[in-house]
Image (cartoon, rainbow, N blue to C red; front, side):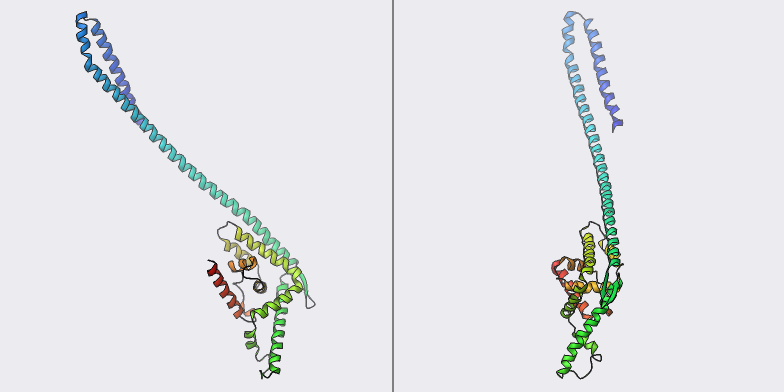
Length: 293
């Protein structure tokens, strides 16, 4: 619009020149008249006055139009400024999001490294045998299975003495496994866990911290980082995590995090004494999620 301003300036300057020239010639003409004719000549300026008044009004209109253009230009500049500010804000948000993600990932991978170190440093004796690192979970599970079987056999022998059974334990082991309840499993697991609690408590504390870090972060794809953590688990490790989860109340922080991120969903159910334990766990998890939501 600035390119059109010369039109208004041309009209304004032309008007001033026209008024100046008109006054100049009128003045020269009037001074050359006799005194008695000058009054008559002066009366002729009524039309000139109206003419100059019109020119003045035209000047006012031109000023208004110029001001209108300036206001429009200011609005355009403000609009451009606002768009630039929005772009700057979006860029800042992206930079802030990137920085936040980098900070989270630095902490996350440090925690993963600490998790690996703590796991490798675990060293306990189970039934007189030394178990270190990831091997601990395999040996701990083997010890649990032996304890589970001993418990079920004692119950079977007791029923056999009462005349309730006619066959031996191993011929009925599958049916005995189905009778093995979650409460019985948790009781036996807790008793055996306490024997090596000093070492495993570090492991589960680290696991809880990592899950809490993911949960409280502002990263978008939280399950991606959970998958990175789970990729370090062995199948026996996932099994022990499942047993340990059953040990905790459903409202505990540890249990909520395990359930929220489906930590034990990759569990190999063939390792369980009673596969119904996992089905029961998933049903409760489903009910709790729906109730919470």
